[in-house]
Length: 305
Length: 309
Image (cartoon, rainbow over all chains, first blue to last red; front, side, top):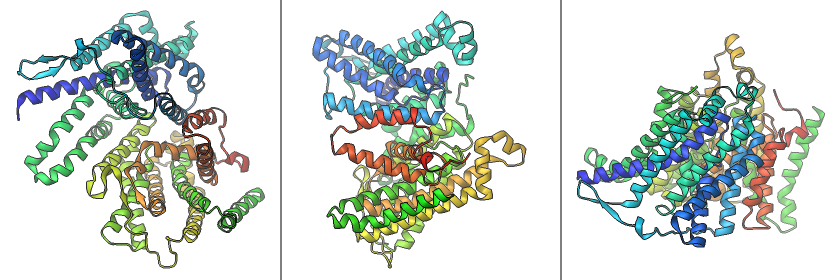
């Protein structure tokens, strides 16, 4: 097996992992702090991608459209929180799952109504289109490295905010005892709206960066959403560190599985059997991983509470 | 009790009178529609057993719909069209899959349980997509409808009455299970796990048996559904389908005998109604569902009678 190919797929896995992390970070904060299951997080991923495309067609400037997409998703997220989800914090998970399921139907269809059911394709500006020659000699798309860099930068920024700032202190306090935090005079409602908005904006950031690589279409957030849930369950709910580690594991396992499981199986069993079993097993791999992790550590790898 | 009797008598009379009535007005389309609703009601009723009475929020119940449907489809593919054998395999296979999934999942609780049941169903969904022999992503045609001897499933009206009878049997069966000693323990583990442990009932085996029974019944619904659509796709196991089943249980009224049936009727009929107006019907259905969760806590069955504790 050529090692340059393995290295390239490793980078792809890392890039997919940090994208999942952007999704999972918001999801795990919202679950950890507000005890809220938000299936509509995948819709926010989609909203970010669509808003960025719309902004690009309007302004023609890539960076500006990315900023507008990020801010737009922040606003949409806060609106969802204030209008619909605030009423659900005191309900059980079942009600939250169902209500946010209804939101998914709404958002998927709304984007189809506005932008049509077909996929939109976006082009990157010329300064992001190039390739980088890796030390193994193969060429790797610059844009994927940029995603990797942005994702890691967000991870560092999140770590700083959560562990070193007053807002982060409130977030951590809210996660461990919200009644006490409210009793100390913190406006917990506002805190929730802010956290939800930034979680949404991170999902939007993941979506708008994914736009040029994957197709922008209604329902594009759903697979990412389910995989992000796998990430936070593996990592441990409420833990940002768990979300990062879980996202990297899931991103690598999924990407490497899709790339190498079939040839690997072909050396063990007959090539025709590998042809059939390889792709099936590859797409089931992360769910198997989750089942194994939950069977061994029912509260995930990094238990936060 | 009396109110319940009148309600069930009305349900049976209306549903039994439906085929001649819609044939008389020249709208046989409604026979197919109500048949589909009754099949989904069986699936929703099986989910209600674990979700409503057992408190197990399974977000992957569509899996057994798929296992049941694929059992029938795969047997028919290999030329085995005996309906009794097919349906027995459908029920048995769903029960075994449910037993395996339940054995791992029930060890977790809360959000972890929701997610792990979703994950297992996703696995089966992707398995269905990658089975190229059986159509893969596109699904496959059912080679021939199940041969049952006394009813001809190719006849829309006969199939309708079979579904009606099976739905009533399933609703009654689940009612009896819930009222039995076993059902009492199951409900006790939902309302207070610590107390049920304290009086000597470990929840795990009861939950697992209920989970398996629910899977088996949903497998029957899957076998019926395969015959209904004559076509089997992995989409039957998609998470949207699981969500639909959950909504039927909640809309109808959780932990009530008639709830899943009422919920199935409500959800599908509202869907069909909206489809008549706009291609973009989920834009309206979505917010309606959100509102129903926020404001309509006891569901439709709350109008008919009180739910169980």
